Image 1 (cartoon, rainbow, N blue to C red):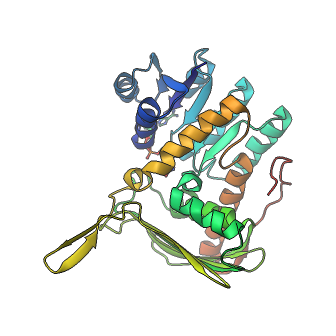
Image 2 (cartoon, rainbow, N blue to C red):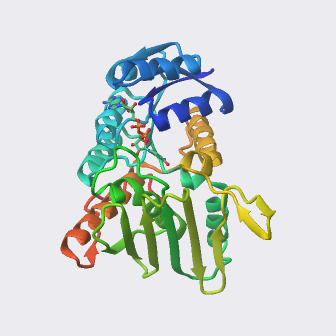
Image 3 (cartoon, protein in one colour):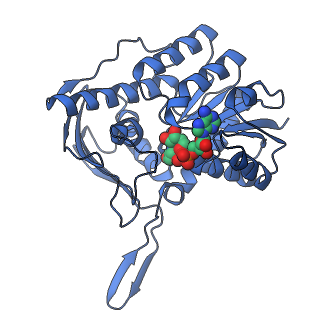
Length: 328
Ligand SMILES: NC(=O)c1ccc[n+]([C@@H]2O[C@H](COP(=O)([O-])OP(=O)(O)OC[C@H]3O[C@@H](n4cnc5c(N)ncnc54)[C@H](O)[C@@H]3O)[C@@H](O)[C@H]2O)c1
């Protein structure tokens, strides 16, 4: 059986997910696209042979041809749409963040727990990036000894048009927050932030066991899209290499190409994430980041916002108990 997928939000990410789903993922087809801008929905639907468009996400979720939903609309719309998917009993892959506030993420966890099965996957696609995945395999195999420090760089060439103050953590740093939790296999306990400019921040996180994680965020770095990570252990260090390692040598210099944005840089990760999502629906074996992971990442982001306001080191509050499925 081919799964019918509906995409809500036909902007930069929705259009890219639609293309990847149509061209590179087996076992599923795009059947419907919803966007507040009906022309944009029509363009993405016709470019990828979808059956129809909807003006709003709720109508798409109710569409009987839609078996599973991908949410790629703005952050503030995520939680209500994911809750509507849960109410309809439909699996949902929600772009990050699960929601901008931990309270909204908590409502999703409670709804999913009431349902008694895991239907939510959060689009922390770096978990599917081959280089990050290789790092995690090495860490889990004990190859670095004990984790000591994680150094991260997250530079965008240009901040997205929708960027507002605070999104540097709730929308951007959540990727590093999730990667840190996932690589280290533990929660973040405390955070400190530095910098008063909305597009630049140095973030220091401390894991529950005391691993130090530093993240340099710069949303308007102009020179290209640049994401790096180095995990230092008691016996070895692991680095995430650039996505395109081809090196050009000319004029007595050598250069490695950089992507201009996340779509090219993490091309494999987005494709593998979609494949894993479709496979997980078909097999019933969950994949990727869960609603709990979305909640924990946003709770750390909220602690960062508190740290920015107070100028102090702030603890991370995780008042909810992890659902049964959250087993490491
Ligand atoms: N995983 C990643 O690496 C990654 C990268 C970029 C963006 N994102 C996430 O993807 C989401 C979309 O980002 P984008 O860059 O595509 O934004 P975008 O502004 O390009 O697209 C958003 C689209 O949603 C539509 N829209 C707005 N309100 C809507 C509603 N209520 N219902 C349906 N459609 C609505 C807009 O008309 C627009 O077409 C965001 O949540 C963002 O955080 C994730």
